[in-house]
Every structure is written in structure tokens, then in C-alpha cells.
Image (cartoon, rainbow, N blue to C red; front, top):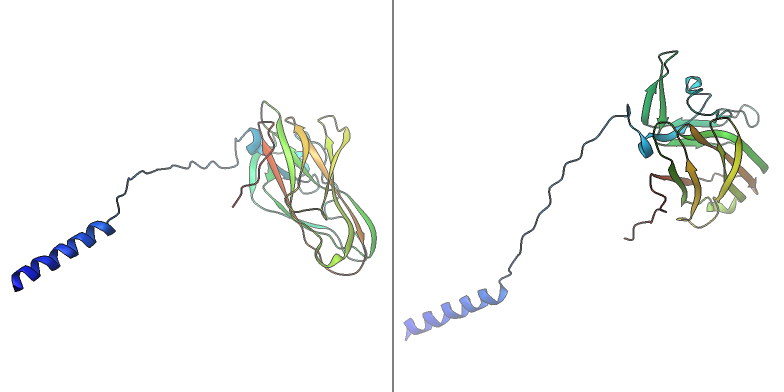
Length: 226
């Protein structure tokens, strides 16, 4: 009697094990990432921010842009621009000094209540390549916090290799985050001049973030969906 009970218990346990078992089909992916330094890159990789004030040796390779980086605004205050990592670098053949395009910039703009136009505070250029690149500006974080500004715009001009300046477009910094504007194309040796326009309603501090998307294909970027 006890032996039959033991067999029954074992059978039940085995049955439960079969019901709860899970079968897995296994697949896999491996990857290798080769990371190049900033020297010798071309195409979309050789685009970035620059200023003729910070790097006078860039003259002759890219148009004059960023001529008002560090310009005074009021009192003892002035615009400050801090660039980040260089993503494209080459050597000025005359001075033998390195010249760089930067991945990003951090801009600080002290103004007063009223209307302000900040002209040519920095440039965004394309140095080395054989084909045009296509550029979109995207409002990542808007400047609506606090309601201190009634107008806030990034104004974009194109500067060709001869120095001719042409209005391109504007990005409303008080608009909806995620909004794109197309700035068209850049050929090697061309750049965008970046301006800012503000109407300040009251004293306070406002921040914003703008992304720049560059491609060798004329196709608008698409934001990823979580």
C-alpha cells in the first residue's frame, strides 16, 4: 500500500514538471564597433560647430562665422560659448596649427528685459567630403519655462565659400519639443551662421536645447518611439 502511494506521488511531481517546462529557441548577435579619431574623417562626420574668433586659422577652409562669439551684451556681461569634443580635425598648412569642428557647444547669453538680436554667435560648418550633406535642426527642449520670453528663435543663415550670406530658416525655441526644421544642404567649405532673437518679458533664467542632425542622404530624421 505504501509503495503504491510513493509511485503515485512521484508521477504527480513529474507531471507538474512537464506542465511548467519552457522551451527556448536560441539566437544571438555579436558586434564590433570601430571608433576613429577626429583626424582624416569626411562626409557627415566632418561637420560641427566652430568660431572664427576662437580659431582664426580656420579662415581659408570655412567661411567667417561665429564672429561675435564672446561679444559683450550689457555692463560687464558677454556671451560665452564652451565647445565640447572635436569630431573633425585637420592642420592649417600655413601655420601648422590644428583646426577643429566641435560636436556641441554650451552657450550662455546674458540679456535684459526687452528685445535682443544676437548676430553670428557661432557657426556650423562642413569641411571635408565629396558630396553635399543635409542638415536638420530639432528643438529638443523648449524655452517656455517661467514665461520669461515672449519670443525666442534660432535664426539660420547659409554662408557659401565666397562669403555670400543667405537666409535659410528659423527654429521657434518656444515651440513644441521635437519639432524639426530643414536647413537644406551644405557643400564642403560651406557653413551656417547662427543668430538668436529674444523678447524678454521679465527677469529669470531659461534654458533650451537644439539638436543638429546631419546626413549624406536627403532624408528627414525620425525620432525613435519608446
